[in-house]
Length: 205
Image (tube, rainbow, N blue to C red):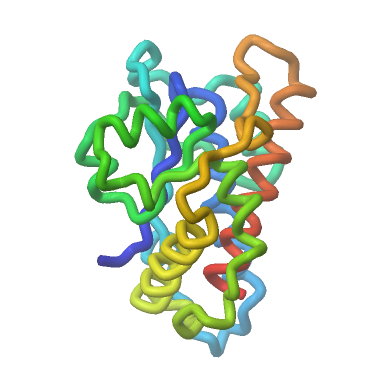
């Protein structure tokens, strides 16, 4: 049930998945800002629950890695209230879409919850497959929780159908920028932004 829930997964939950979590919220907020006041749009948090976790708990309770936070803030997002956490099975169960940073993390998620396979994608894989979906065949567009949820669930099923059991490609993985310079974080954030931006457009064209 609404809101449409997206779970982002990486290794330590301080770099890639937090950036994806907050950049998706920003992308949806920007879509809503383009609507006229008469559209009666719901607030972002009523339409979308974007959150994240890591396959390991080494950084549990920590803030976002500073260069990752700089990327989010520099692009117009915020890092308020973020705290890293280890992935739990109930988070997978509650997610309508799970986006992992790498194929290894996809395998980790599916090993925990095999029934989540059709809802779980490497982020780059999802972005690569999304253009092949006929968005005109998805449920009607409206900026309310029920419509966004229905469209989102149908979109995930459509991307899974395009994938048709094929695995992710090596180029779908996001590099781990931890311990590297701001230029690496910027490149990874650009890759994340490309996919979450396309997702936001598919949800709210």
